[in-house]
Structures are given as C-alpha cells and as structure tokens.
Length: 331
Ligand code: PBG
Image 1 (cartoon, rainbow, N blue to C red):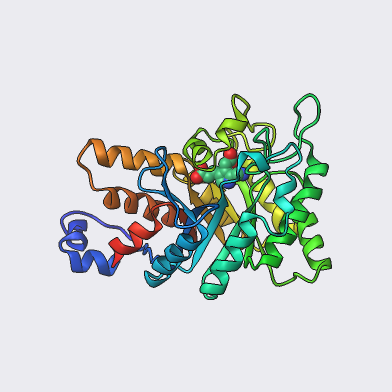
Image 2: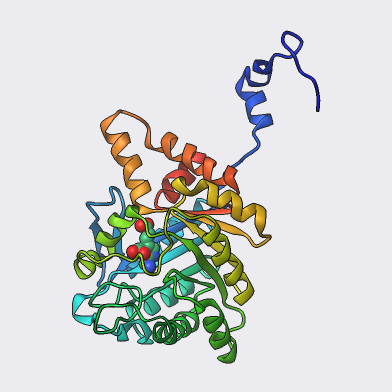
C-alpha cells in the first residue's frame, strides 16, 4: 500500500482539466461497443411511433435496412431484431415462430443481403408469436412447459440461423435450452451460428415499454414471467444460470436489465471468462427520456453516464435503444 497524505497528495491535480481527465479515463465507450435493437413490422415504407418508447420506431424491412446502414456508418457493428407480429398469426403454440418465411426471417435475410458486414443477433423466445404472450407454451392451468418449449425454440433457432443470423440470443429462460439449441444447430450444419445466452434475465418491471412496442402486452395481460425469469432478490442464482449456459455451449452471456443489476454484471465478469453483454432495457431507456424531457437535462449526457457505468461494471458490449443517438454524440 502506498501511503498518501495531504498536502503532498492532491487528487484534484489529476482532474484539473479535460486533457488530464481524458488521459486518465479508465473506461471508454465506442460505437462498436453498442448493439442497436430494432422493431420490425410488415409492410413497406412504415415508420410507426412507439409512444411508450420515445424516439423509437417500428420499421418495415425496407426502412430497417436504411437504419442498419445509418448505424453501420456511425460505427455500430451489431443489431438485434424484434418482430411485431400480426395478432392474426399468433397462436398458443407459436407456429409462426418457425415459419421459414416469417417476418423475422425476411428481415434477417434482407438486412444481411444489403449489409453483410452488420452482425445480426436475433432473439429466441416465443412471446412475439404466442396468443397468451408467454415465452413458451403453456398447459391447461397456464404453467409454462419447459421441455416442450425447448423443442419449439430449436425449430425457431434453425429458421433464424438459416435466414442468416450471425448470433441467436435465447431470452426465454427455459432450463437446458442452450444445450438443446446448440445440438440442434450443430446437427443441422449450423455450427457457425453463435449463441449469446440471456443467462441472467430477471423478471423485471422495466420491460413494459418493450411489450407495448411488440404488442405482447395485450396478450400477456395480467400474467407475469416469474416462473421462468430470475427473482431480482438473487445474485447467486444468476451465477448458476451463467455457469450452466456456458457449460451448454453459450459463446457469451447477457445480464438484463443493466442499471439496477450492476452488481450482477460485475460478478459475472469477475467469475467467468466468457464475454458479458448488458441490456439497457426499454424501461431504463424510457426513464432517461422522461427525465430529459421534464427536467431540461440532456438525454445523451444522462444516457452516456449510465452506459459508462454499465461498461465500468464489466460489460463488453451494451444493447441500447439509444445506440444511434450515442454513437452520434460520441463523434
Ligand atoms: C422477450 C424479450 C423481452 C425483452 C427482450 N426480449 C420482454 C420480456 O421478457 O417480457 C425486454 C427488452 C426490453 O424491455 O427492452 N423474451
């Protein structure tokens, strides 16, 4: 230990101007650390506002391609796609999830064709496709069935992989799904497709705006996802989930939400060598928008502070609805 004492030590010297502060900054955020989530709707030339998620839109595939190009030109190298499925196509068993020509598959293929360098990450879970809004299939008493769900997740994974996804991100929180999906992909010649596991996905109250954005809120109604997503009182359980997912073949893992779970991000990055991603979720983003709009604060300043905190805690990359705004701000 170095013995430091005032007045020979004056820590303010290292903070006295921007140059020294920049020189000594321990954490840097680059546009290439950001992943852009995008909501995709059917149709042409569609750009729909999402009231619950200010300044975010649902884009038809043609405009999603434009967004991908804008993001890429700002240095963002990865995006995550979420489909807004026509309610008429939803059913209890999520059949549309593994239709080879579904909205998601068309979006993946068209973006990948227009911009092959952009990494496409797709969310694996059944909630955009189920009439009850759960991430899996349910029995008569409404319980979400684990192993039956895994079978469908495998089919969904294969169609998204064949459509051109670089990575699949299972967000459903079923037990054993990473191993099942990995095996199924491998036995269908999709060894090159990676798995980014949402291992520490909490049953959070901050997913509300997302459920409005994809429309699953009308299906889920008063139900919750606490029988499969993690209890926010726990951190050790998250470490068990991460360990299992890595042992089953996850290439990297996600902690979600992010800002209320910095301790989990830190534990994950200290305990495991696999890369850790963090998801600044819809409610976290919307809170910052509200603060910026109601308190004359600058949104980008607020958001950058939180993204840096998430990175400082140990996240390699961050999924953020503000990715484009922040990439511009960083320039
Ligand atoms: C679906 C899924 C959700 C989110 C990402 N994938 C919602 C949920 O689990 O209900 C939430 C993302 C956000 O709030 O930004 N499994």
